[in-house]
Length: 115
Image (cartoon, rainbow, N blue to C red; front, side, top):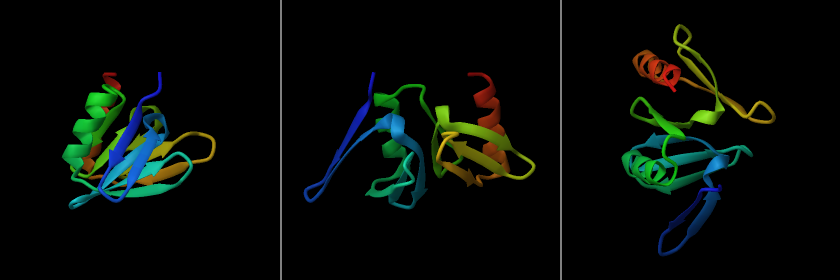
């Protein structure tokens, strides 16, 4: 089953399949969506508001890592707390290394192991 998102403002519209969203990065009142095809899209929205949308539309598929990241769990490739690295990959054409705090990585790793 596909989970399509629709984000609309008075001047623009964004429509995408949640399965193509790899991770979301926050920067103040903006979130940057990173997609499987390496494209990005910036939205005027706080991370907690976007997280609420994701939880409602795709329960259990995404997880928050620290205060500024949300990751698609199916794309988590590796977690290295010592190096402070979280690698997100589709194992075909997209690999990206993120660097959340060690505390956030430890909490995420513990949560991920319980899934």
